[in-house]
Every structure is written in C-alpha cells, then in structure tokens.
Image 1 (cartoon, protein in one colour):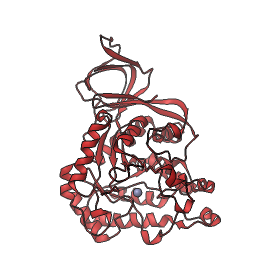
Image 2 (cartoon, protein in one colour; image 1 turned 60 degrees about the horizontal axis):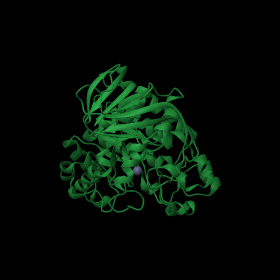
Image 3 (cartoon, rainbow, N blue to C red; image 1 turned 120 degrees about the vertical axis):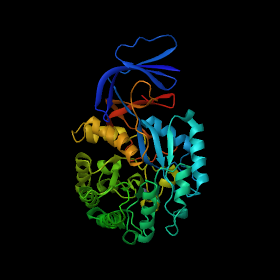
Image 4 (cartoon, protein in one colour; image 1 turned 90 degrees about the horizontal axis):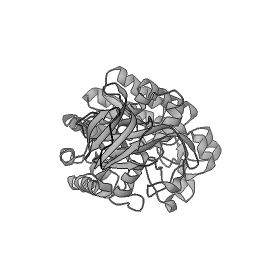
Length: 427
Ligand SMILES: [Zn+2]
C-alpha cells in the first residue's frame, strides 16, 4: 500500500528535526521525505495542512483486561481505543486473570495483539513482580523477560515487602529492566476511597492520605540508592512524591516517573459530584498537588505521561461511590487533555510533549527509538494541535466509557497513526 502525506510538519526531538515535508510511505517504509512529492498511481493521498508528524506515541500504563476481564476490555477493543487516541503502542499491566506472571501469558498476549486490528498497535506486556501479584514470592522474572515482558510491576497493588522489592530491583538490574511501582503504603490506605483532606472530611468519605504515596516512594528510593537499580514510579500524584523523585534525580539515581492526565487536570473537588468516574487510585489530589505535577512536567522531573487506562463496565461503576471500583479509561482523552492543559497554557512545548509521550517511555523501557527518515519503518502519530472538540464517551472505541471528562471541550487531538504498514485515521 502507498500512502502520501502532504504538507506535514515533521518534529523529531531526538535529532532536533522540525521541518515541513511530504512523506511517501510504501508498504510501511518511508520511501521519500521531502517537499512537493508528486502523487503517482495507486497512492492514497492525505493533505495534512501543516499538522505535526511525530514519532509514534506509546502509553506505558494500560490495563487491557484480557485475559480474565473481557467484559471490561479486550486486546482488540483496547488497542483500537489506543489507535483512536493517537497511540501506536501500549504496555499492558499484569493484573489480569491469570496474572502476567509466566511466559505463556506473555506469549499469548503478544500473539493476540498481532492478530487484532491488523497488528496496528504494538503491545508490550509488563510482567508481574510477584507470583499472582500476591506480594509473597517473586515471579520468574528471567522467563518473563525472555518471553517479551518489557518491565515488571504488581500494579494495582504495591510491592510492599522490602526484601521482595530489593531482590526484584537486583534481578531487574541484571536484565537492564526497571521495576514500576504502584507506590502506596497499604497500612495507611485501608478502606480509603478518596484523597485525605478537607473534602474527604466534609463528605465523610474514608481517606487515602498523600503520605501513603510519599512513604513508599521514599522507601523505594532508599533501596535504589543501595542496590543501584532502575526504578519508575507509576502514576505519581502527590507534591511530596514529585519532590522525592526530583531530589533522587539530583543525586544521579536511576529514578523516573509518570503522571496521568487526570492527575494534572482534576482535583479532589471533582469528587463532590459523587460521580464514581472521579474514583481512582491514586485518588485525585489537591490544587497544590496538581500544580506540583505541572511543575514536575515542566522541569523534567516527570519523564512520562501515561494514562493508567482502567476500563470498567457501566454496571460496575453504576453503584454507590464507596463500592465502585477504582479507575477510568484514558487512551482517547490523553492527547487532548495534554494539549489543553499543558501545551496551550505554555507549560510544555510540543517537543517536550512528544518526549513525554514517545521518546522517554521508549528509553525507560529500552525499546528501539523511532526514526522518521527515508528507509525507516513508519511508526508515527499525526497531531492536530488546534482541533477543537467535545469529549463524547459514547463514541469511545474502548469497550468501557467510564470517564469523568464526558462533555469536556478540548483543543488538540490526534489525526491518526501509521504503524506496521497500517494507517488509522481518527479525525
Ligand atoms: Zn496503579
């Protein structure tokens, strides 16, 4: 198949590229890249009118729910949701049933991902740190790595046991992989449903204090300093945790972190609505925490934007706040929220946005970097920064619609993606 993208603006922060160009793609390979390429026969032509062509975006924190919870999402619906949101790759978390704690589950997921949606979206499984994510005995990490796992996490639950965390960091280090921690000191969060503070008190809701996150990040950084292994904080949400990562980086420790769009957009004020789509873990925090997320993104403390895409069925969320499961879908609003909250407000440049959605997660996961150049495989996200749109959850490609952003007016969206020889246009 031949695809000609006319009048694109190719931005690749890795080599400092920012140039206007046409791009001719033949069977998934960039054959020509220069202005004014003539459209030959049998060429599918798209005029991008100055839209941005960036290295393909990856969401390194997604719950695809398969195997085990296919009523919430499947590999097929989840990867379609990813493509629609502007991602050419996702990493899937191991809290499936069975958990991703052995080689055969890793292989099954990778095989299935290649079969759905013409293999458009690359799926990189994240292996469990402990067997069945129970926090007791380490999972066979070498075996998981050999089968294709790209990192380790017990996400949904923390690795609480310090000895387990130490050993996991040591093994991961031998494999040059990182441990992704869901940072939560569980003894402080039992029964909690929202951030501890003025609003939880006034609503009479059981609290999740921010210190539960800070304490776990502090312990982990102490371990990292001792064993010198790579460590990544999932969905950082507190000012204290961002400050801990900042000082760890200042010491030269191999510590990185990610933030979700909801944690740089919403505060715990949103919970006053009692909308169960404002219930997530970690919970929505205070205005000061949101400002700390933005400052962390701006100064580079926060390396990555990842969604923590957590689909739940309508029925599961349609219950009292106390009983609703944690989590929201994120793949189809991430880029819109990031442009609206970060780029159009001057906090991040477009180059920095691309780094946090594409370059940095690939570095952390040791995935090959993407080059937008003649002769290279095409793996691109095409962005329309000024497209104004209203979120309609009913139109989501995800099997689940649990998002607090229904009706939000956003500026900026993915126009489409090209990967593995397939083009997907979402606008
Ligand atoms: Zn988590």
